[in-house]
Length: 166
Image 1 (cartoon, rainbow, N blue to C red):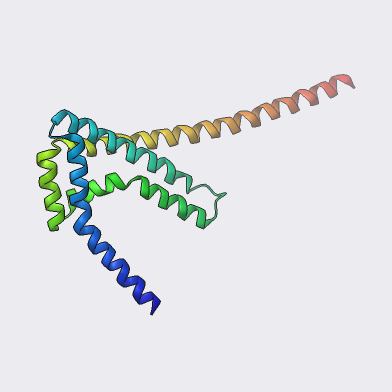
Image 2 (cartoon, rainbow, N blue to C red; image 1 turned 180 degrees about the vertical axis):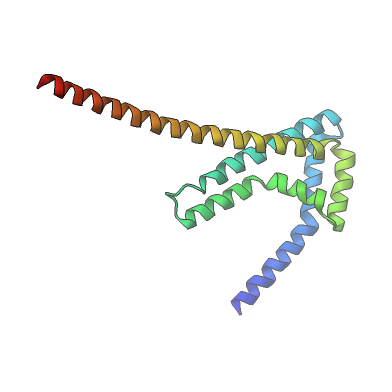
């Protein structure tokens, strides 16, 4: 019985969100951009870069082996929440319901260039996150290699000193 109640509540919540969120988000963005092409570009780049780069870096932490699966799931949920602005914009762009179409019209009038700039920002942030993670991993690996080489060099010096001292 409880499972049925949870399923019904989730279904009704999703239905309400799909009817409400696209319009609400389009109005929020439209209020920020205020019909300006320049503001649309700048706000789109901001949202695209920030709300893609940070979630990708956060979700990368879930791959660390020292975390339990519950912690990893929590990290993934946090990353999903951080990506909500981009996901709401994506829902407007890809949505085919009345609310998504209304959101598209609102963004066309009140937030020109926002959607395109948001896409460009997201792509730039995704590439930047991949480069950053690669750089961090490479630096960690080089640090481990350097530490191992220094330890081996110290051990070789000690063995040479022992041979020379005999």
